[in-house]
Image 1: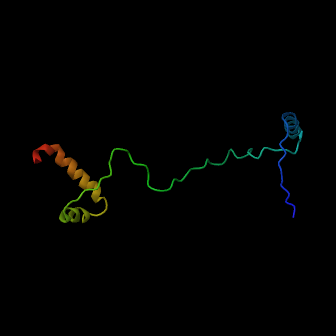
Image 2: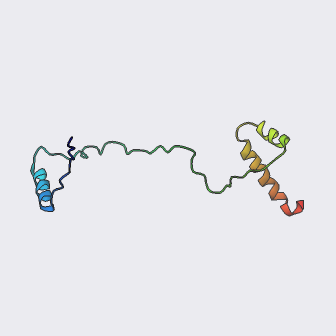
Image 3: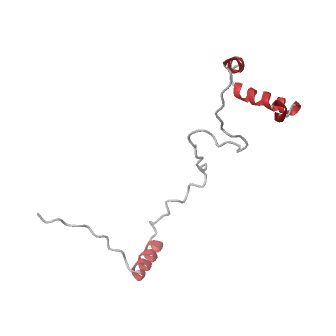
Length: 99
C-alpha cells in the first residue's frame, strides 16, 4: 500500500507579497481583531497559593503540645498569633539570655 504524505508548499517572498496585496484590495476582507475594543481585557486567574511577601521563612520546629493547643484554641490565624507572640518576646528579651 502506498502512503501519501501531505507537504505544505510555502510561497516565495514575491508570491506572499502578491497574496497580501490581493487580500488588502478585497472589499470583503476584514481583520478579525477589529471591533473588540469594547471588551474587557482578560484577567488571569492564577491557581494555587498566592505568592508570599518574601519576608517569612518556612520552618519545621517542635513545640510542646500545650503551647500548640493553646494557640489553636484561639481559632483561625493561630500561627500568626504565635509569630506575633515570639516577636513581642524578642522586643523585651535577647535570645542570648537563654544560654
